[in-house]
Image (cartoon, rainbow over all chains, first blue to last red; front, top):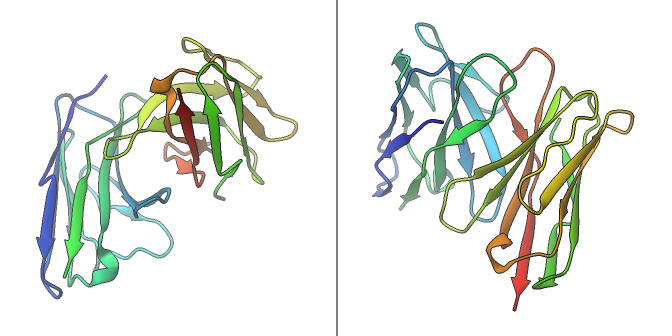
Length: 115
Length: 110
């Protein structure tokens, strides 16, 4: 299993500013992902954080808006840039250990409110 | 590509059974089931693999019909602790990412 520490757990930000969310895992993991979950909705994949290379973004998400870093196998950051109220959501980090068809583990999430 | 779940919501009395379905228009490599309680992270329940392998968890079991590209989650003799939103996640061949369905909200009343 994996223990994921995600920071901050919540924040209230002014529109036009940026917030960086950190995801720290207690073991080396193969894959790290960032999801967004709006209240009462499903989990939408933003991007796959690749170690040592650029993240792979899903349709509708771009690097300029959601820059991602992954400097090593245990840590990643997601930045929400130039925020607007539409960015208010829960952002979750998820990891997969190993390369087989294994389960995903999730951080507790960051609840972001943009005012 | 997002799998479709049904029903969207279920209300049960403790001890009753429920079935949640998840279907995909694209060929699945595996289906994952998660439960999320309000304000918490999703928690893994089980994986269903190609070949129809079925894996159970306590009184929760699931099946995977490759022909129909459909998975079903069976909750037997439901307990209050089963309340939450259930998500199926689809994994496709060659990809590690999970694409989640829209969720099924399960409410268990005493």
